[in-house]
Length: 208
Ligand SMILES: [Ca+2]
Ligand SMILES: [Ca+2]
Image 1 (cartoon, rainbow, N blue to C red):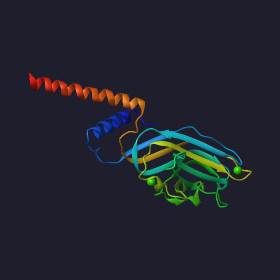
Image 2: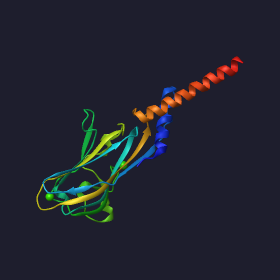
Image 3: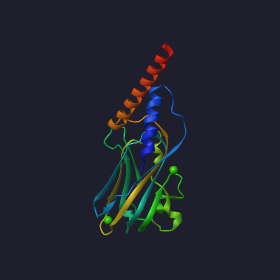
């Protein structure tokens, strides 16, 4: 989870944008570990959602499944989506149902730069835990990471079930001016008030 330093960064970005200055370029890592999972039951879909409140331009995204167990992952279509309710949202198929998969247990990282293709999902050896998804995570590059992220596990066949304990979104990104939220706006208005007071003080000193 992101902590207070991000709010400070967001306020600073907003103040810089308001002053007409560019936020300095440079990649920042944003990591959101979401330890809330659920059961993947036969012929049903498990949806896990997480709302990212930070604003940044995505330059890379990796997705980690935490302690996933399933007795046959070939049953599953797994989709990652961003702002699926919005017309400019996006979604990719991480893994597609197949007859060539295995039983899963443990952690798996999905990464366009991963060691193995998605067809090696759940072979169980360490080298098969860093996987390239069926469709590239790079489709999200250039988007603002702000908004609703969702993973859907669609189980398409009877006889094998599973569960997952959590998931982590790991971004590389470039900070953007924040999407306005009441709390952030309140802080910014306080900041502008302080700037105004400082200017008035300086003018008063010059006039004296
Ligand atoms: Ca990557
Ligand atoms: Ca099943």
